[in-house]
Amino acid sequence: MMRKIVFIAALLCPLSVSAADLADNAYWKLMSGWWRAENTYMDGELNYNSRSYNSIIHVELVGRTYRETEIKFYSPGKLAMGTARGQISADEGVETVTVFTGEMIDDSGTVKITSSLPAGPFEEQTSIQVLSSDTGVRVTPNPKTGTDTYRMYIFAPTYDKRYRSNFGLVSDKTGAGAANAFPDAKMGDLRGFSLFREDRIAATEFDKWRAEFRARNKVAAIVEAGADGKPVLRRLK
Image 1 (cartoon, rainbow, N blue to C red):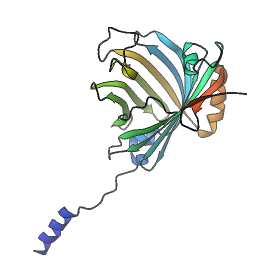
Image 2 (image 1 turned 120 degrees about the horizontal axis):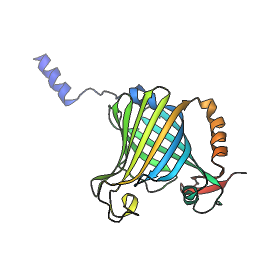
Image 3 (image 1 turned 120 degrees about the vertical axis):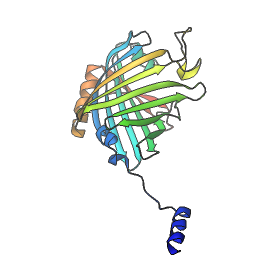
Image 4 (image 1 turned 90 degrees about the vertical axis):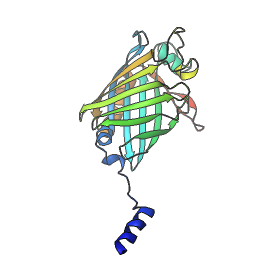
């Protein structure tokens, strides 16, 4: 009789089991740290928007909290000019700094992105899902249409090498998922594609690689979050 009472009590008041932290997840443990990247960016017809640009990424894990700082370096051109909103000259490049934060929402390691700075067209439904110990996918769905706006695959075949491939998809007729230059595009058609080829670096190498990428891409200004969270441009001295 006493055993039955204990069993019923356990059902009514289940034991509280704390989920593992992100750092305990094999995938996130592999992703954390500093990465330098050689990148390329194509349009939906696989023509180059930017044949070569660079980035530095820092993935930090604190308990169930995720924080990613991504610094991109664009060489002079249409993409750099657009990113700087015309506030640089045609022979100048630009650097951007974006910080994403998120929270682990289940024990498998799924992270829901909760904020981005600078503030922009942020998709609240974006999540990073763990597929295996070395592979994940970052998905930005379009709840209105049911088609993803972005899908990025991330994997690290070794501790020191990581690759990311980001597919921008036609997911709407307006806004971030619009066809834009492709008025006859269908849902799911490719809007753009980016490939990031990354090598792990030590935290102490950050300044060296930032200086290298600024020089390589002729960076003259930085776009980052202002006090109000909106993007502001600051020229380098």
